Image 1 (cartoon, rainbow, N blue to C red):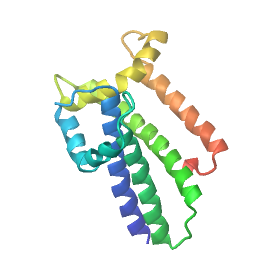
Image 2 (cartoon, rainbow, N blue to C red):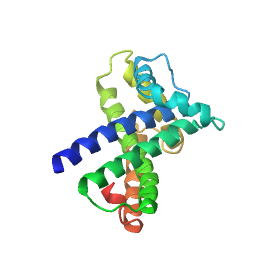
Image 3 (spheres, helix red, strand yellow):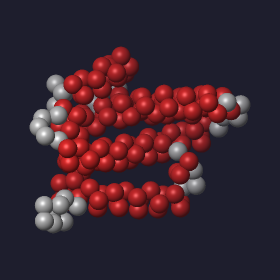
Length: 182
């Protein structure tokens, strides 16, 4: 059962990351002609397109992508609960799904920042993945850079954001018991 739970979690989590990326790409109005963006759109379009007919966007918020992210986590939790043979409490699953989407968005942000920082050491020219990561993370890092400027050419904004994200994660782990297990 552990191997099956791992496989189910991995597949659902990977797709959830792609759905979150789609929402995020639309939110920051990233370059949709970028090959990375095209992959994200192609991977989510078969499900998001029909949902958009029912759930129109609210301003810059793509409600279909948000609902799909929530449904992916809910489906994951239902499948894992069925695999474990445990009882299903819909109220807990709904709350757990909302919290899991938020936490997974934070995990995605962490990895994107880390990859962007590492790639900045080696990037020699135009790279489509680096460009998208820059477009996605710059709206979050720019306000930090205004407060804490680069020191001797060293940008500390990513480090400051990592510390803030870790603080928030620890804070939530103290008050939401299942936060750390998501």
